Length: 194
Image (cartoon, rainbow, N blue to C red; front, side, top):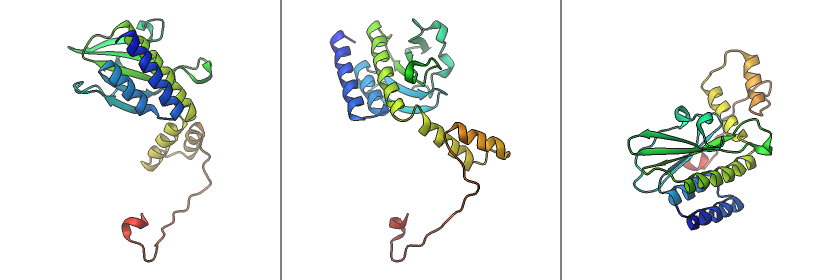
């Protein structure tokens, strides 16, 4: 990656953030610029977005097992060799408000070539832009809500108090009871009624 490519990536990331393009678009911008695969994960290492350039091949589902914050340069970018011929660089997303509660997620670049210093700078740019995108979403609240409802539908709770506690942590206020309803729309095709 050259200085001009880094500047072009910065401009593209700013355009994506300004236009509300989202995490997938930011990941694709970095994947194209660095010629690799980019994985965006939340603070609990859950998948948020994945983008790849051509020829990258298969990459791990998460960078969690290789992330060692104490081995990162200036606490910002961690590097690892995943396997022969596959290298990774991971940058934490800055926490919203700079309150120091830890990163709100991670951006990882998987590449077949060893990343340069400018690639690490590109990672920090995209991680910052992705942090803005997550802050716009409520600092990960939609993901927490989705995860809560998935666990709820799977029947993971047997204790009502822990259910209410977890709902509150996800930013949800549960009603005292639920009512299921089925509607039959007369004259509508089955596919349309769904």
